[in-house]
Length: 545
Image (cartoon, rainbow, N blue to C red; front, side, top):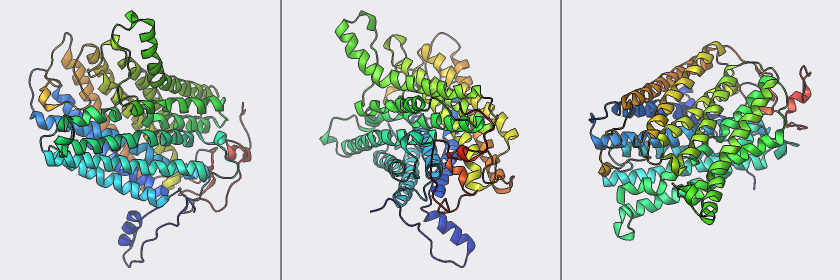
């Protein structure tokens, strides 16, 4: 048995357009599958961010509700579900599919037909889930038939993403070029492996819980689950921190590869960087436990045994992922002491990694009981920060690797201000919610209709309208920046400047083939002697220290 299947080739057709569409629909080429994920996720990002902005604008007037409460709840659910499982995770999955086999020096992705099946499961499930939410059938929805549809559709989304991640993990384990051992993996490929291994634990648990919720809602006599509100109760862990931190781990790997390319040097110490990225993936343990791990209020007054009983799981599930994220960012950023060549990809990836680090730190604080942040919008601000980190990182990855997929490059002069605009949008969307969270503004992963309009009608001392206005403005700014990036990418990758095969003077194997890369990636297998195989073949102008 082999993990590499032959490419699916569409039947001959007299129409070039028909043949082109058929080629994309039936493709098993990992580069096309990755780009399909990226394009769909970008479209959903625009819609989900716009809906999130509308919900945020609703919070500005804290004394009344303009929208119908059921519709508002479904809008909130669409923003949370869409940005997490139709944008955040698919973006990093798409990047992995499109570039990891090239970084491995492989001719193809392992189990490419399974990856193609995974894409279509994810897409069909995502469309059905959005339809269900629109018909008042999402979490806490009032239409029982569409609540069932949403639960099953969300399960399809999760299984589709899991299938693609299994293919990526298998590729990294089995299709590496000769000499490319685990210690020599590019940082991005290593981070995708960490994500894939974590997803093998987290996503099946989420899918199983969705099935349990479906059965309990369909057949109430089987369980005492709380009907349409059980989605948040049982699967809420998969939509919040630290599980969402696991989805952002590839941003750390991206930063490592981009910094190495920008400085044209070997990042050291390599082993600790790989270990730190792996440590950041320990957030997956929250999925295995499925219940919040936090330090209770009055922790200082507990007995020694009770303190140890709370502190050990808290350190393992909450603090170690933060420590790994901090070490990964700090160690990679240390490579910038070697004067880098500033590029849009470097700025995007660095800002994205800083957002992920801040989100990891805020996630730990949220689970400290004495901070009094449980049930507040502080959690939403933290989640938005991680979503924004992935958006920034993904934009940087497209700027960095886009020439390898399309043969053309994005203009740095246009991208640099766009990176700063996106960063400001993420900060405005999230940080005011942190402040509002300390003021006890209520929030929830999936607010229940029966609980009343507390998520939009509330009162506390301080300028509540100001914080929510700033958050709404930040989300609106993100819509503008993502749209501007998409339009710039469309123009540049169709009519822009030709990039050449190695526009960045790269260090890893993806730059050893033509741009765009052919269907089978490489004309010949490459033997690898270090973690930076192309640097071994090029004249050195900088220290490798």
